[in-house]
Image (cartoon, rainbow, N blue to C red; front, side):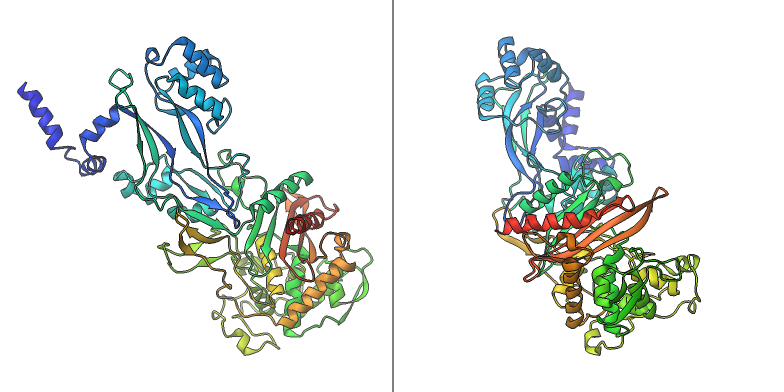
Length: 629
């Protein structure tokens, strides 16, 4: 008896062992007393406490609460009569045999899930009331917080959550040891779920405990106990700039057209807020197999060859440096005569101006202009238009509740203009190569006032030595040029705002659970851009885009609910050794009073196929027009 008393005293007064790590763990858990309670209770998480996303109009993008059935592991002879169990099975649309088979296998509390389903069964009011009336032991009707609302189609911009124990172990070992976090908890895996994870995870879960004795029989006097965080300010609400109704309609339209690979980005024409962002292939959380991240890539922020969309940048560089004008005449007979470059139109366009060259997307005119430019001049124009850099909203310093720099679209690719120096030398084609590396900086093109360059961030890295062939092909959006649909849409917004580059924003503010604002993420101009094009240059490019739709390569979409303007593009690429085309269209509407800037990309289309992106652009713009009525 003395030995037993001594042992009990040791457990009560000296919890833990000589291991500091074990002592810390038991101290955090409340000692052996808490472990003893855990042995006789079975807990089930009703709500993780993770914050939710809402669209610009207050519609929930994530999060819904509904009633479902929860099953706790108790002895089969304590559950209820065979008749009542049959009634329970009927209420859940399952046989009593299958019900008992599932229940017998339960070792930890579970929500009832239909065969093949991922989420618990949503009970009707009649089902919930019927289960309550049965009064069976070990089964209760409880509110369940579902992360993704019914009918929700996962969105790349929002991202997903998943278990990532290795990441938690690497970054939060101390919190795991103290019991503040668990290896099994869900963390942000991509999109806003990842970039805002530290705020969204909240301050704790809401759970319910069901008490049983040592024989797994229910302790009727205790029944259920609810445990929830004491801070009423959580969970937080992230208010996005998305229009959920428009987003869903565009997603349905892409499915209707059978678009399986590509993206659509819709920006507010005034401040570049992201109104819709759709990516294909579809995001299917929990069904990733490749392991390389390709299955959750957001194609709206992935940089690929832009083709003739980039001619807007080339013309901007030509007008800023005055190496050409919109009315200069060029002759196109279909062949450039060097570098193996030709025009898409067999036989050529004949004589045409630079403005008309944009409307007809003439490769010969733009290759000619590009060869007149210095690499630094073309790069300056790309920088001034926000190309070749991450375009999304970000802060380089900690602010508000964010203890570190924040970038809302962390996976966004910057894009490129020229290959790095070693690669550029290796893939040199023909023509005399310029001197090895030259110190480029952000050289001020002729005609650009010094005051327009006063916000330059200093000398840039040296540009690779490039020859005329590289310039000619880069000028038409091929070679090493890459751009994302987000950057293409933001390019249109920049032109609509007279050359002022904005940072597309996806979240406008974070609010507490009661609706009070925690922090505002204001619309802001791009940081560190290398100057600004002149408003006259922007107007010239807008006129050219109007001509594209009026009588150029985009004339097939001239008729619609809104008059629109834009630029089409086709980029030649290779996939698994086979020739493919990326088809683009970027523009705005209504043309007279722009409301939206839209970029559309349809990837890996067969060569020679019609530009599906042009049709998609018209359809998306008509959807937006109908919603404005």
